[in-house]
Length: 172
Image (cartoon, rainbow, N blue to C red; front, side):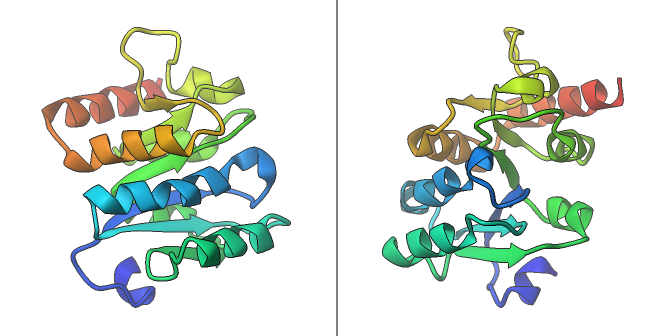
C-alpha cells in the first residue's frame, strides 16, 4: 500500500526513518548510504517521514547523488505506525537521542532496527550487552548504515530471533 502511494513498483525493500529533519537525527547519513545499499539491493527505497530545517540540505544531497527514484521525503505524517509497519528495516541514525519511541515501536512491530548507540537509544537497543537488539552503527557513518542495512536485507534466522528478543524487551 505504501509503495503504491509513493508510485513505487513491487518488489521494493523499504528502509524507513521517522523523525524531525534536524541535524541531530542524522538522516543525511542514511541518504548518503543509499548508493552503497543500491549496489547490493537495487530495489531498496529509503522513506523519511518528518519535517524540519534540514529538509533543503537533504533534498540537495538527494539531487547530487541522483537518488530521486530511491529516496522520498514525506514531510510531517501522523501515521508513523502505519509507515513503520510497511518497513523492511528501520534506521535510527541519531547523533543524540533521548528515549526513542520510534525504536521502541519498531521493536513492538518486529521490525529490524539499525541504530546508533547514543543517549537513551543505547538503552533501547541494549548496546551494553553482547547480543544487542539492533545492528549497531557509529554516529555520522553512512558506511556503517549501508553495511548494517545490507546485512538486514539479506534476512536470515538470526534476524528473526533478534526481532523477537527486541519485541520482548520493548514489552518489558
